[in-house]
Image (cartoon, rainbow, N blue to C red; front, side, top):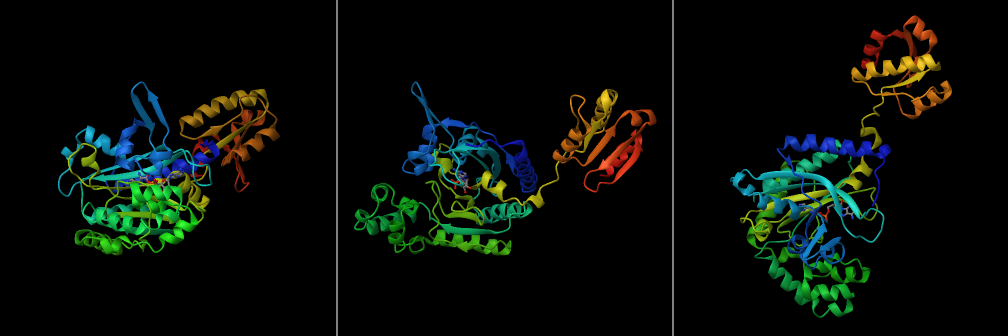
Length: 409
Ligand code: HAM
């Protein structure tokens, strides 16, 4: 778990502000749900046999109640959607579009790129089955990454089938695994029995090699699923979003149906998925709501923040650092700072009379655009020395002129 310090928080704020502005263009509304949910919400949705539920949840038991810190936010958003009967606002062709920004918690083995408290920007579209939903939502996030200056990315796409063809594939895989499982790790032996599709989660190299020859989903796809993924691909082409097909794409959550995808980025090391998601038709019904389809994704904010190039970030925000000289200068500077703040500028000044050298150093360290000198001479003449700290150019200026000069930048 990490602190986000003031020096770094600018990246986070930029990421959040850009996201909010961009998602609003696509008609998404923000939703904020509690960080604690009933444990069985995740068992029923993410899956009892998933690593997330089996090994990674922070669970608190109080009396007969068991709650967990949310390891992800799709299930909580669907829970909220059902609880507030929001399907009433959904009509054919008009799904509900939601996004969220916030912390998630997973008890991960400590490693680069994985935190135990991490943050996600996520999106859920509830109540639409059209392939356009995938295409438009993926186009939106693709566009957001470009606006953030994150360019070396790759979209990986696959389908996991639906309630009709997925069980057939699961059975085919189970049969294929049966004679091989004993050569695999202990986890895989268990998975082969409990939930064969989870074997693709395995990180053991020997098992990975063996699985390279396992049957692929495509061969078992039903006509409806094949048609759906075909339409998603066609629309992505129309939206100019390039993708690669990755039939081995592994998602760590059980609720997916049909389309799944990830966007990977170079520069992240082994944990290279900046975001992942997919369709989860059936989940709303399973969590007590009407039988409505869903689709969404979540992006890891630590990973996204790290990839934003410095050049994309807005400049630092201190406008003026006041350099007050002598006790009289300091007193006068206090009033001047108040008046300039009232004009909307951000002002830094020392809380006590400090040597000039120390104040000038602080001005540079704060990344202030200007240093403003307030000393005896300035007080007598009513004109101040205003130094542009980037160019080094200094002008002598009265208070009225000061405001327009700082405004000009
Ligand atoms: P997920 O693939 O588990 O999906 O997580 C999405 C993203 O969160 C990952 O691609 C990664 O960037 C980030 N992430 C996950 N775990 C960690 C961690 N321990 N440390 C840092 N970053 C992490 C979900 O959570 C689904 N709820 C996404 C979704 C929404 N599917 C449909 N709707």
